[in-house]
Image (cartoon, rainbow, N blue to C red):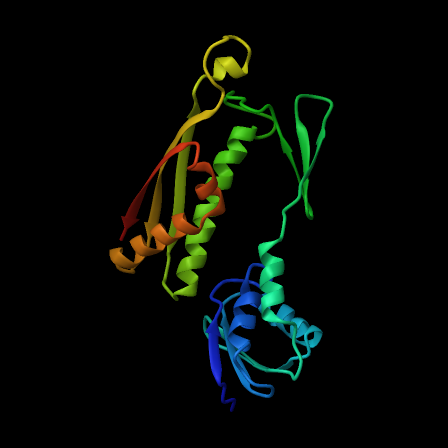
Length: 237
């Protein structure tokens, strides 16, 4: 029977998406030898957390699987990497991609361990060989908000059944981009859509999570500086 001095809940986060920073923040006030209980619903934590503990000189004690959540117990070691140093490293992290032009009007994107194709910047044909840059822009915003909302709910132990975000956007003048007209602008004029949430939780809690998701979304906060964005929250019970 473990007697933890502190508890932190990582919800569905894995060790590569912020869980370790949450653990470090909870661990920091503890004295050497004291125990932290970590709760998680993410299966990969079972393998990644013990390895991380060995790396930073904490003692991984035991895991106790439950129906939905597994409890992990960690004894704080006498030495650990400084939390502030890790937080500053996270703040200064830069994402990198490499893009190579292909033989046709497409490009191959290399991002960490993933490779994918992009077609013409603003192709609006019904069927394409690869998504356009506009498709990726909308998908980037949609995925940022959808996964961000799910992460916010997970941290609060709120139950979410289904999420779906449908977005659409248009350019000020796509013909200018295609060099068929000489007036106008190729910039995206507006983005609109509906964010559907199916959940047994209260509307107040879901609206709070939605507003917090918008506030903390890197893509939304970047795009809204130049593009009019209107996304309606629709709660389905």
